[in-house]
Amino acid sequence: MASTYGDWLRQQREAAGLTQQDLAVAAVMTRSHISHIEAGRRVPSKEDANRLDRALNTGNVLSSFRPDENSRPVGSHFEVAREFEQQATMIREFALSYMPGILQTERYAHAVLRGAAFPPLSGEERDKAVVTRLERSEILANPASPVVWALLDEAVLRRPIGGSDVMAEQILRVVRLVETERIRVHVMPFSLGAHPLLQSLVTLMWFEDQPPVAYVEGLHTGKVHDAPAMVERFQGAYDLALGDALPLKESLALMRATAKDYGHHD
Image 1 (spheres, rainbow, N blue to C red):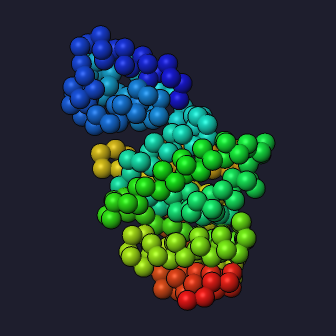
Image 2 (cartoon, rainbow, N blue to C red):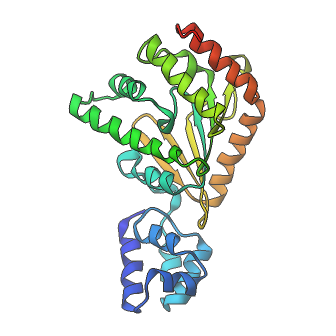
Image 3 (cartoon, rainbow, N blue to C red):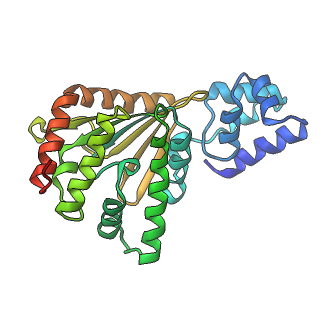
């Protein structure tokens, strides 16, 4: 969303002598939702834009010039999604090729960034990116929130990123997180064939006081979707895929067996 829309909303709010909380009350919205709109991270729904117009006495300007939520890119292709990730109360990940960022070990993250980045990152750039990725994983330090589910294509387990030792370490980290009931993981086996999420990485996020969003990522691209109809489509695809995935115990058994194949022995 162009920042001018959020900037104009902020200017009108300040001209009216209202705080974000004041406007949230008047428009029957949440303060964090107002904040995201002003910062350009969200496109208001038609109903929200109408309520903002009424609260600010701006006619129908905010509703008439509401940006197209389907054309909004993500700056640096993940930065907006990362901010949402830190606020989410529930996260559901689908990983097609490698482990979700919040579950990656340091060595695995280095290997991903060394092999997948183009143009290649310098050593310093890669180190900074790994630190950022490890900082993201700190949300798992809270034993209860966010609730995290990971749906992994079997390719995530089979592709030897970083070598056998790195893969065994990475898989066993996820196994331990499941065993301690911090996360839930299901594997989409190769034997399943095609499934509804086969085309890209998908992250679904829910929040305490604002509507859910979906983040979809491809090569050098990423986009946050917050239009309710689009988010529901991603949620539906995730639910269908989850229904075909291996149960939790079978997924754990496959992960342990794969770690053993990489050379890990209890």
